[in-house]
Image (cartoon, rainbow, N blue to C red; front, side, top):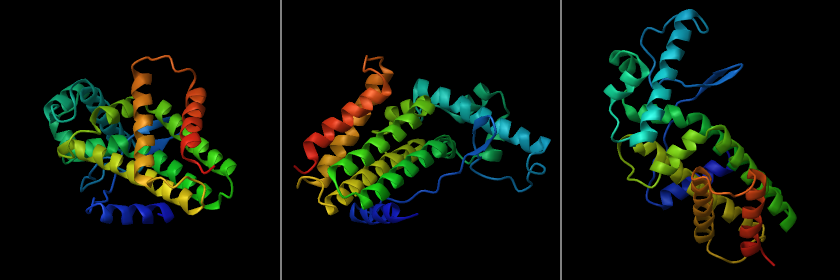
Length: 252
């Protein structure tokens, strides 16, 4: 990608070689942005793009992903079996292995659209911080990032809930793509903090400590939202969080 991914690669190496993962791209069509690309493409593709057989493929892929998401939320990604996913989706087990090698690829397909939104928001914030010359510009960059991340969370609440449910577990099996996303978010938060330090807009505090504290605060707020805590409107909560954080870390 751009400057942010270059920073992330450097951070991964410095942290002991966290691997970059290739995540399947989501597909969409007008009026329906909840379709998913399969983890693998059959040797004989099912007809021309947009044709009946191709639509059937998309429907089966979506059915498998939607069923998996429900099962994952209820019992966790590691406890759910492929048999249970196909049964819930109402498709033959052979259909699963026609499009996915394992549960891990289903998780990657599920999170691909959300991951793209998160990466775009972080990238835009990075560019804004690179041009920032004042604390007002710093505040605006972080407020925009918070709103974009909040909007993504509102569009995909079940995925965010699954992320929060699984992101602190071991990076093993089907959970590995979720932990990879968390590692990416943490590394990006550090990179953004370092960029703000380079503009001399933050106090001389360790970037990792401040970045991880902010990520942790956001995760805690999201959990509170899912628990039904009265936090006001998303805009109010976002503004309060950004104001609280920046009041503590920006340069005076």
